Structure formats: C-alpha cells, structure tokens
Image (tube, rainbow, N blue to C red; front, side):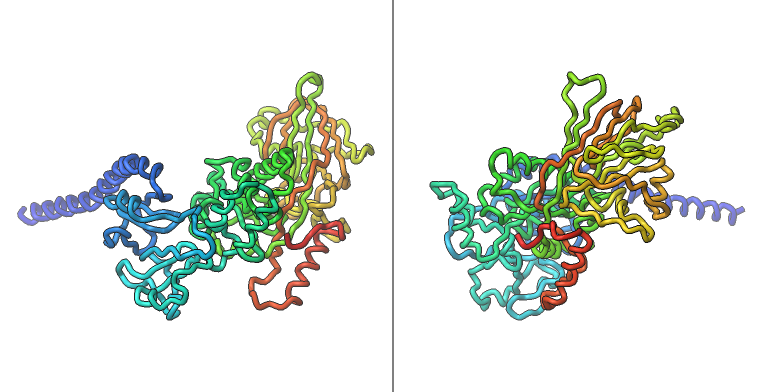
Length: 544
C-alpha cells in the first residue's frame, strides 16, 4: 500500500513540474505580447517627433549595445538612417544627444566623416590596419554613416585624412547634403545651374532615387527602406505608402537633367504607378527631368521586371550594395506604353474607360483567374460555351478567328509569372518580342486548360499576329477582363489599344559579369545577345 501511495505522489509531482514547465513560458510570452503594444504606444510619440528614424524591435539579430549606456541589449530601438541603437530607458536621451544623418548641411567644399561608435556590421575591417573590427563584446570601434568606413578605436587617430569623407563606393549615386544646401542658395532655379552644381559631386554623378512599396512582397519593402537609408541620403529614399510617386519624383526637378535613375521596389503595379506619375511630369512641361526607371521586383509575377532582366522576384538573395552596382551598369531601353480605351455598348453617353498598359491586356480565361471568377463559373457552366468575340482587327484589317475563349495582347516577352508566351515552344520561326518596336503581339487561347498547358510548356497559344493598333468587339453579356493584372467584369463593349508613349527604362543583362577586372571582350557578347533577343536596330540603348 505504501508503494502505491509513493507511486501516486511521484506521478503528481511529475505532473506538477510538467505543468509548470509548460505554463511558465506561455505566461511569459502572453505577458510580453500584452506589454509590447503598451511600449509601442508610449514610444510612438517620440518616434514621430524625434530626430532619428526609430524602429522598435523585440530582439536584435546580432549582439547589440546601447549607444548611450554601452550596456548589451536584447530589445530596444534602432535608427535606420544612422544605425545608432538604444534600450527603452535611453531612447529619449539618445534622440536628444546623438545627431542623425544630415540630409542638408551648410558646409561648402570638403565633406567630413560622421562617426558612430559600436554595433558594426559583422564583416567589418579597419580602414587603417585592415584587420577585422567590431568583434569585441563591448561598445567599441567606429563606422562612418556616409562612406561606411570602419576603424578601430586605436587606429582612428592615425587614419589618413581622418576628417574628410568621400562618401565611399556609392558617391556617384548619393545626393550630398552640401548639394541640397547649394540648391537652396540659388537665386535662379534653372536646369543649367543644377548641372554646374553637379561638379561638386564629381564626374559621372548619377543620383539614384529609391521608391519602395511596403505593401509589396513579404515585408521586404520595410527592410529595403532601412538598408537604402543607411547607404544613401535619407532624402532620396521614399516610402510610397506615405508619399505618392508624383510628389517623390519632384526631387528630380532640382537635380541635373538626364542624370537621375529611379529604383522602384515593388511589383509591376507599382512600376505602372510610377510611370503614370512620369507621364504627369511630361504634362507639366518637366520633360528634361524625366528619370530612367529600373526595378527591384517584390512579390510574385513581376513579368515586366523579368522582361527587363531584373528577375522574377527579390527576397534578399543579393545585398543592396550589389543591387546599386547593377543599376549603375544597366543599359537604357525605350519601352512602349499603350492606351486601352473601353467603350461600353449602348452607353455612349458615358465616359469611356481609359487605362495605361505596360505588360498585357487579356479577356477570357486568363483574366478569369485574375478576377477569381471560379465560383461564378461553377454556377454558370455556359459562361464560355460560345465565342465571346464578334470581331478582331489588327491595324484595321479583319482577322478570321477560330472558336476561342480568350484573347491576350502582349507588349513584353513574359506573361503569367514567367512564361515566354509569343516565342512558345517548338521549331516554328516566330520573331522575338521587343519592348520598343511599337508592336503588340496578339494571341488566342481555347480555355483555362489551354492556359495551364501553355504555362507548363505543353502547348502554344494561337498566334494571331503583330500590330500597331488592336480593336476588339466583344458581345458577351459579362466577361472578365484585365490590364496589367488589374481585373474587372465587363459587359459588351469595343476595346481599342493604341500607342501612348515610350518610357526610359533600364535593362540588366544577367549574362554580364560583376567582376570589375573583366575585359571589354567579355562584355561585348552579352550586348550582342541582347540585341538579337530584343530585335533589330530600332532598339535604343546606351549609357544615360
């Protein structure tokens, strides 16, 4: 009996300790989750009014020390512009006592280093002795927040030209604070004056503006904003959730004409948003300040980015430093943009729908997937049981059509998240697509299953031809339609697609080597391949 009682006691003890072991971490986690919103509410006021670009984190991703009290910290706040870190108790003092990056300074001529102590990148090396620095378990060593040079505490005094900063590797893309000060001093705001001031920034100065959509991708937009603010002047990095492209691009009007490159971090829709804002600049008579546009693709799909050589998506696989190098090496190509006009049948007194198209227009199964009409199709199986097209005209000539369920009109080489639609498969000789030839590729599909076969390279679309203008007359009572991934349901209508304008884009040849020591003969072949892929000599290319 005593043995049974002892076994029961041991079982209860084991159960008690197991319960404690499970509940304690859960309770701590719950307590932290309740405290976190309170802390954020308390700090939000400071973050809005403070001098720094503060961001709160529950856990730093590397050993971190407070820049005020020098103590190791696990959670706290960091500035994504200058890189200082502080625990909760020291944030206010740090904001008050430690300066951030100056987006504009009154100093003329030579520019000085701005040193921040501690919390160096893990792969840092001293600019003086070339040894690794920032490895000691304490707040030590320095980093310049402009040129990103790092130096040991003991080596700082022996640093050659210790007070002068050349802005480092990316001096050719950074807008120096003293440039903006000189612009403000100008009595006459004339483009020629900006070109004279550009001499302060050295030869080959091509400032890069970063426009990031934080709603694109898996939180990559927020990460990229911080990384680019660290490398560049924060004034040239914009969050499109806070400032629209039309306002961000006004910075181009105080920079030398023809020198600016815009890096759009987002999906194809974000790129279209920026290109529409550039069209608005043209309407304002700001043609001289039109920038060259390049893409860092976030999210999924990204057919335009793929067609211009920037890949189907970015998830941090290469550092932002390499992204900037690729932007500097990219070539210029003039990309066609198109006007899509939709006039509803029987409603001629209403204003027609007018849209801009960069990638493609489609009606039928392809647009059905974008619009998610699956439930509607199940309810009405006859939705695509008959032809939806009354008439198709290419450059004014009537085209005889087979029994198709959908039409796809492409301006770029890729469609459907990475499928080269026009070239297709097999040995049939079809001219390659180009983004600057003023031509659209028009294709047909038999249904959703045919679309799926095309995407897995088991079938080709029905190629209907290339044209400068496309006109479709649709008779279906209700059909899915989309332009550049933006879908809607449309009744009977007439659609006319005509050339609108050309946008200066940057093309990145993935075959180009990143080795600075490569010879000219190494780079000639990729350029020749690009010309063959894009088409004949109409293509406009070269360094801007």
